[in-house]
Image (cartoon, rainbow, N blue to C red; front, side, top):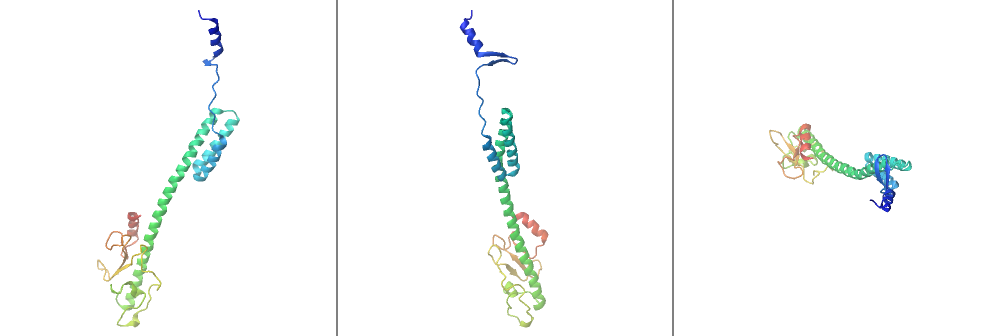
Length: 224
């Protein structure tokens, strides 16, 4: 037979409900993080990465309202979502920044290629004007300098230069001299080119007056 004192203690520690037996001792729920902290971090996240940061702000406000209404479960869920959004926002911002840096670098390299391409095309046109006046293009020894200062000619009066600006640089963006040769390759009367980033002639990164826009686009794809 169960002692009366034990029976009384059991009744005091337990209570009956429609869902079964529950412990009479109260269990203190874990405290939620302060909503104001989430709200501040959400606003900072919105500055870093607006898409996720704005979502975090929304859930932080919803969390605050849920707490005010006494719905701890709903507030905890929204607080958790706000936390993940705050963590993801800087990561998203870093990823986008990396992509932006890669894109900017690729755009800068493409711009350099375009500058060189325009230069050799302009030099080609200048050599053609020189040829119309003098009757032949400059020799390889005379080079592009013949477009700026009159070289030794049998008839100096035919030289109508300068054909390019006297202050024009004869160096490419990599600090190497633009190349010139007459006659050129493949039956061309002359060639003007840059040796490219490696500074070595007759390599794949050369940019020359024989290139057209389609060849330049393919060049961009290879050397971005």
